[in-house]
Image (cartoon, rainbow, N blue to C red; front, side, top):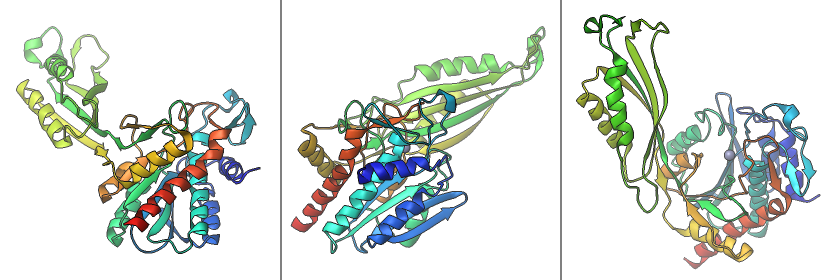
Length: 380
Ligand SMILES: [Zn+2]
């Protein structure tokens, strides 16, 4: 059995459903410690975070990932038990096989190879893994970054081994993510009898016109890095259940997915001005779950592109679509962030799997990126 297959299977066997790391990080930490890495366990709340570094100066490359997985769902619907790694039809099956225990294993092996080949390398190479990426994401990388700021820890480059590929390994890398802004609107009316509307104020009627306007607004046209901002209403609630009462209150929840053509502050202001113009008596609660970021085409992106081209002969698409990842917390440190990993077709699903041939190629890909980055440092 190859090293990468062996380590990925070992990780899948540990049923690390968020936020339980189930011993995955100890396994990775022991391996890296044997190769001379300095190991730190940054535990915040229920969440384990592993910070393993080799070197002490800049530039700093962080390989970023998570050991936690989403729940399996009904186990009897799996073709083989979710936490028993099983090889079938050229694929390794198990929860986390693609998202993202294969990526974490490959990044770990690539780091081991890199420091063995370059024991006196310039700068710092590091692994950061959390057990809270799939959950609340509060005590994971977000808290680690607060700690980095306190310590003055710089990060120049961050390679995230999340499953970015779509049809074949290497066809797509993520170079940014849209921001996500949640809003919760409460509109106050006056409850009353439906037969006496002049003695009540119907918040459904008052809000309907405002919502119709909000869903028809083109918030921006997008830009080279991002599609136009999207506004989606996810929940509306009002009414007492009785059909002879005008309700006293209405609640609406919605979400903006936005790029760098807009700002959270700008979107908030424009939305609230529509509500005011419609004369609503309202309260807004906002929750900004992530700012958008777009990585410039710098040294890391170049190294990733060149490695994929050299090893596969294809040029990856640079995308900003999809959901958020922990890269959003690292980007504000001024780091260039690129996400690149296996095919994501089965992530979070029943019978999650990774192609065996892809798995075998992953460590060399991450090692190739590091080798190219460091060749650039030598030239500089
Ligand atoms: Zn993931």
